[in-house]
Length: 253
Image (cartoon, rainbow, N blue to C red; front, side, top):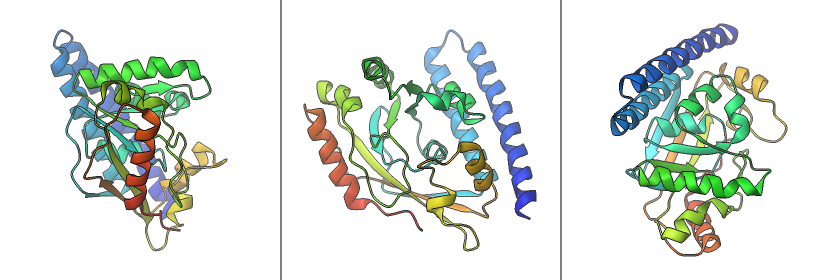
């Protein structure tokens, strides 16, 4: 049963992603001279893609709190590559992601199409470029999501928030929202900290195939009720961490 589920879902993910990719870029060509409409089209198609993938994977997303409305700057803890799918089902947004994601099958294809901002975390000189992209996205009324832990974890605790990408918020005194995410799997499935969370030396391919075998995945996103604003990025990062940590729920083991 688990093997059949894997092949069915894998085929569905490939077909849906390719179809969405073609339709998205066809719409972009038609709307070439109408950038605001192209942005709306991109947001709509990415949302449809994410909701369809979630349905194929039997990923149920529960929401607590009220999602921010664009333009927004939001930080979140990071557990898995499917975090982006969960968030895409709930908000129109652009992510800041590690550069390696661009080369991943399926996820890389749509990440590029969704205007993801790729950052080389091994090169500090790349930070100003990404800060400029964040400013441009917010200026164009997009929502931006950053994972300030700078890595995905097993979900047992919240890592300290790194502050470099909060420089835009500090310089412009732009309010920053926060959210936390955690997962549960089905009763007969392996625990979410192993089957959903992607951390340590786990390889993407094997982990992803095992994830598609799960009977169900439940994600809970909790949007914070406050925002943090200030002129010092390190102080902003600390305040956001404390607020996020207050509502943080460890991922089920």
